[in-house]
Length: 371
Ligand SMILES: Cc1ncc(COP(=O)(O)O)c(C=O)c1O
Image 1 (cartoon, rainbow, N blue to C red):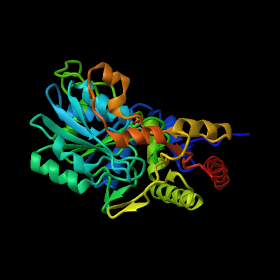
Image 2 (spheres, rainbow, N blue to C red):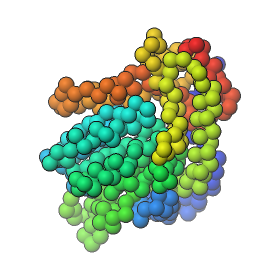
Image 3 (cartoon, helix red, strand yellow):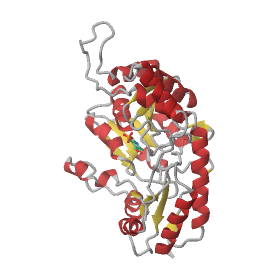
Image 4 (cartoon, helix red, strand yellow):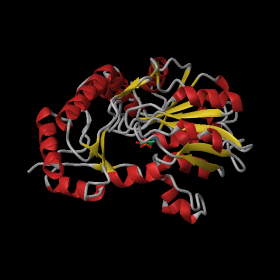
């Protein structure tokens, strides 16, 4: 029995043609023309002035934190329920992540909890759009303005997602994306920073490129990294971006199909379809098991695996990460929604290449466990 993969990308546009162009012209490094083309097109799509392509979405966050000169003594507010990359970027800079819990319906950060966490040391709010719905940005923008805080917008999962008709990726002083193959737009590995601020854009470019200096190349005033994206990766990205609208439509159709197939299924919370400010793009199709269901997510995933269905667990909350506990961070802190999502949530196959027949197999397997 073949396994239904949790994610398989679709690479059936101009990817091969543009890659062949790289090979034929010899442009494979980050100096090649697809990189600036991809940057300009990503920026235009979000209505931003500048795009800076990097090697992945995690390092895009490190670069954002460093570009804003966030460091020792500073605090950055973020959700407890997110990928390690968000907190890692802040901790590596010597600053402190300060956590808020999630909204039980949308699984994004509960913006009502942010204000109580603001102190004299708070420098930024790192918003993270989770699994296909955006953070309720109106409240965040108001708080950032009132308290003079920067916004780092982690839009890694939010290609083609809008908040009140404005694209995600347009809200941060710096906004970041990932192009890992499970994203609506992939480059294999890759990331991007977007901003309207020419100074920040310049700083991100320098951080990406070891702080080489224009005049005295090998003399460095600051430490950066080599975060460059190759022309090969950007070529794939340009081809992918041409089909983003189609990808969003396709994912929404998948989301609706799962929603209909699981309607009335007892014991499980399905993704929230829409809020007043947004419609879900189903980056992944998540499920959260009710307390009454006798299996937890790990057991549920194991049973699905036995039926040839690939799954992934939800994020494990930041305050319960052994690495941060070892650093003495988040001692005795509790975020009950994030803790429940981590233990009761997982996501089903939801890649762009998923077929209707594969979805039917997923539905049958899920129903066989929960009904
Ligand atoms: C919210 C979020 N931020 C950051 C990242 C990191 O991106 P990358 O895998 O490209 O490093 C991911 C990865 O999926 C993510 O989901």
